[in-house]
Image 1 (cartoon, rainbow, N blue to C red):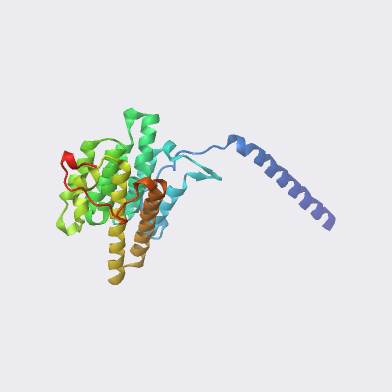
Image 2: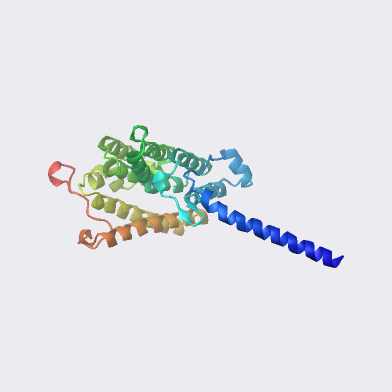
Length: 278
């Protein structure tokens, strides 16, 4: 009896091993990178799945969206992503936590430029990059005090990536006309003259990133001093690290354009007149 059971176990093991080997030979031929993160769940479903923890659900949705392009050891080029689906996930993340800057940062820093690359290569008649920037503008309108950083970067994308000067200056006007209570720094309210009138996209972005990093660090120090919420501090720390990392990478890549004054923020232009444009 025992011999029969042992023989049956070995036979079952051999069958399973053969099935696994067969599957391993078939999957690489059939498997391919998926360009879409799939349909986003509703905000209600996400809240229920997180036991009514919307901040946790928002963070989980953002992590999923950032990680969907890494599939079975391969990376999906973002320029081939399904951006309408990406926008749905961004909207879900923002709806769950409207005061978090993370989904707007992803939209402004990661998806707007790559969506434009796709627009140019695949379907310029149905451009998705403007829709990504529309999402940033709506997020700013919901909470100017928390989201102005990403609208400022959206204006840079409009000006230097999409070459849509009208849109860039319209976004700069939104910053300039925002309520005083939003506590937007003066350099951001004067984005037209501080960033957008520079001819060199690199110098314009360096000025923008330097201003954002300096402001985020000052904000974090104030938050620490006032005993702010740990979750918000952690979010701000991630944003600072990302901004500072991109600024450092830009400086390393273009030593010829380093700030001769050695400061974090390049000096702003003297005026917005044509003679002073950089």
